[in-house]
Image 1: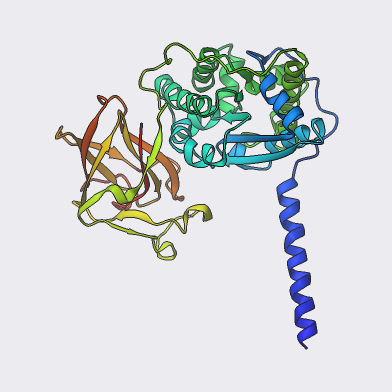
Image 2: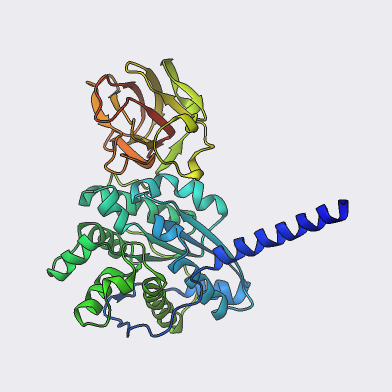
Length: 404
């Protein structure tokens, strides 16, 4: 009897291992019969000898990917990982997947230290936020620059030898804009950051538009906003072309030069997460794991075990002392998301609605920035739940404060 039970456990564990391995390697093999990818929208800037020589000479390398769901999913990322392993078969790679669905470049800048830099200096870094800055956050050009520049500046400050590749993915509205011979706001803003820091970009969005206009590709083949293996393979092919060309050039390891001045003085170059325990609840707030089973709306498992600074009744108030030029919150906002009223340094209270257009049925992760142009130094904020609401409730569930 005991032997049969033990055998069953072994079989179950083996089955789980196979499933896990299959999921992590999904899409790793590129589909065949891809369209001819041109070099027209592959923009090589600067040297990429640092990563090449690190991989070849040290036989080790840290490669990190930061972005939204397109990065988190098994799409272009594992294809690029497989390309690197084939190109440098003797190198032991550390791959960091720092993709979180729905998050924008602002959230990316706030979590870069926690999700990327905490894993060690990055040798080769890929970042994508064009789609999320467009359809999720609806950023202005200014906020898109502040987020993306914050990410890039932090990576380079942590390791001046880090090679960086920025990728612009595409959604239907961005595709339509390109086909009208215009530039999408999010990707063009990110492109400004790339040029300022002299880093390469993969303008997948424009290449997809070109292939569709040339009748070499359909949007259905590409797979939509979250590309199918076929669409992800087009992106991976463009990255392979970029790196292959860059690595053919001669040169030595050298620190990348930094711009004399930032593109935006208020960009989130010192973006960080601020522990919710730093806040001082005055009334109505608790730190707890929300009782999700009794809360309407879909939940994503990565957030359901996190203790959050929570309040559900209007008038609940907290205070927070902080230092820097920006303050906001990183929240999950669902069907009952409320409105926060915020006063910084005794200024008049201003409302900030946590409810998002994707919050109707989902507890949606998002960063809400209260102010990003404060004077450097110490500040004090008062935050309270408003009696007003644009949702079915007044809830605030804060995972972290964000600052710069």
